[in-house]
Image 1 (cartoon, helix red, strand yellow):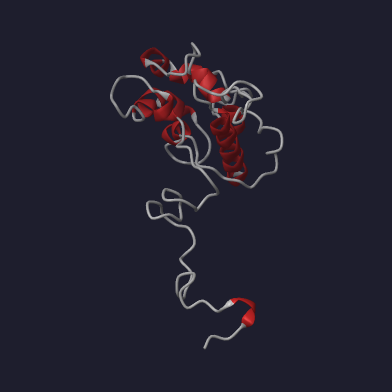
Image 2: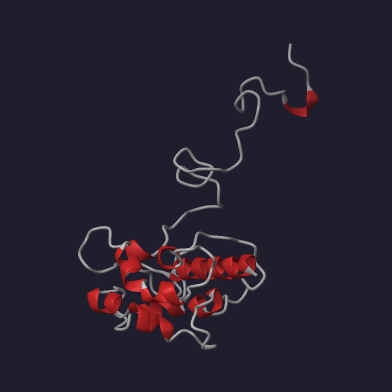
Length: 188
């Protein structure tokens, strides 16, 4: 059950990240244009005025705003309630992008559910994301970092020099050094 919730959260987060566009986005139909998707329910709830920033008043009201997402009235928020349904085409995907920093901060016991105690502590948890101490959360503070390319690739990906994990380097010489010649020809 927790794995399913983590997948749903991850898919929603990836769709949310993919939908984010800079203000100088190309016009519809132009190369590089992508249709805008609305933010996930938890962002819409927290950013009450819809300006893209979670200000001090919205942080202070976070517990009440998030409780409004509790559609089944059980006093806790599941990933489905936080993220909404996955976007079309991602329903059965196994892609697992990182959890949004807001969810990580709110879910202090990391069980994939924001329980009643975590809801009460939501304002304090959100303040931990305020990296510059200005009393508000801007998208660069609450959105996951954007990654280019497949997971495990690139300098900051899990397999890159700045990342952790990823597959170990292959044994043997680097490509082009001591590699067998093409077409099975022997070296002389």
